[in-house]
Length: 364
Image (cartoon, rainbow, N blue to C red; front, side):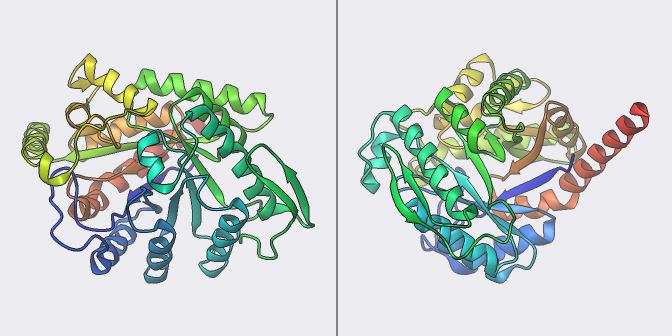
């Protein structure tokens, strides 16, 4: 099956190891990173959502304007924009920009942060129940050819209808993320791709099995799977591990200045990464957990360390487990995105294409 690389476009030059020096919303930086991703061979790029950051929908529109082929993966949280309105906003963008829009649904695991946007549902399972209804309505807006009614606990729509439909037939491609049982049930019903953190082989097997079962209960095909990880590359394995150690040292020294510190509340996904970190700093072939441990895994902070060839080999392992999308970003976002395009992305594509060809020959 086709493999896809997803990048990450930040609103400014900052990370666990880089203290922001420019404005919170830095248009020249965004433009540079977006174009770098396109030139590096990424298929799409994630625009993240947080209760205090610039609006991902508008940043995505700017990215689409200054690129030609790069797709965007727009993170949104159900509960803060009416589903009918968001559906029309995304469909409009999709029409303007040739079907390059996808939606990343993040329900949110930190009730304290969610209250900054006025959330009133502290129970996470209840928030996922709201997400389920939200996506029901969004998909009706995208697909219904006549006015529809929807009656739920959280959303009630009378004669809902959108004159503008997505350019993508059947609705905009939708990613769903989350680590809880409730998240997996929503993914089984609604996800085109389920987004995993950078987890161990065993954890990936566990989660993908549960998502497949959830989709089967809904009578849907199995979603595809995405893995989020931070590749740390060098020309030799020894240099790559030295680079990882330097990243950890710098991230530790700059925690107060960067703000990447352990949160007060760990999501289910973060708990899975922290449980992995408790097993050791290096898992499987080259999965590195130290930054996740340092920061409380408050974002995708596990890394794959090695040469481009070695990391591509691990991506091949994950591909064999059912992962077809790789969301990769570096600790130096712009420089690393360019670096990934030089070797890691083409090496991985070639390796997986060769495996698929071999399997096709064996099948005959």
